[in-house]
Image: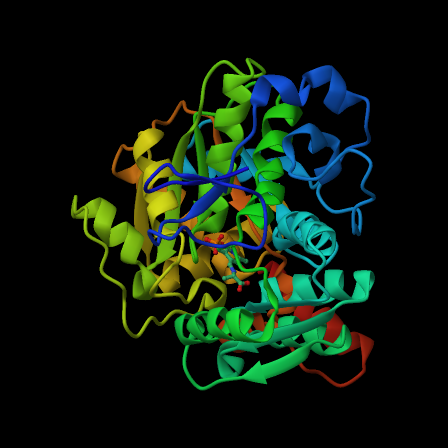
Length: 404
Ligand code: F0G
């Protein structure tokens, strides 16, 4: 069953992305009837489908899967001590099969697509969504159309869509234009839309929160800090954790902090200015291309998550994102893409302004691997490579210099 978050209307399951009133849809369960429990989860291996009582797929359906989820929750003591934060963990979503958290949504979204009889799926993307959808479409033998702001996509992500055989349309405008076009294309040409406007896809993404609390022994952190682009993930994680609390599996909820890049921060602006009206950013710009989005479709769900959780949103500069990326790589061995480093930049600012206390337990979500966007490092970091003649004496000189 689907339910409109704006007018509360219930809508039967089917190919539907928004309500007649224009509101966003979410999947509703009769939670008590699902049979979800810690024991039921523990009877299955780790990963997205461990939590299948809380996923919108019948028990006898074999999912379209690449064994997604079960990503590491890494305690980061060195970084915590440098930032002056309490216990800190990274939920490192770059460990998913296509290198980002999107796989959690796509295993569910593409499985539902197949159950609904779709044979052609599509999305607009800043890169990761298209990489993930093209892989899952390939695995299930579906056609896949992706519309991309092709000049602003990290090459690793584009190479994935090409490798998996997606039909790729590159446009001049940004993600927001691509999003508008794919919605129209899906309506007109009978393509199943798998952006995070799709309520079933978001159900897969909520398992990220389930894994966090399960890994902490069903304890809930004080904060979950994550990047916000099209605003699906923050909404999904919040929805899932509310369901766990309703079921009595956890006894409290975290506060949600959404981090945006300063040049693409309409949700942070709304929250920080205390406004209820949403104003899109018309020409979003940031080197964190994954979250270069000015008109996030899920903003009402994200604002709800932030308000209900007594959370916050904030904008961070590109420079602070780069510096957070470098710190995480050098202090904790985790190489993440710029968008994924934004929560660390955000955490630093939230600690500084006192929103997050120095004794609070914080989980940051690093949403995607750094390997997809190598040019950021190669072009933007100072070049550390010492070029010498192939000679052992020269190496000795370099080492002596580094030691001095
Ligand atoms: N981090 C990464 C690495 C992303 O790729 C995205 C979104 C986000 C964070 C933001 O998540 O949209 O749920 O708020 N990327 C989308 C894409 C837009 O097309 O790959 P969100």
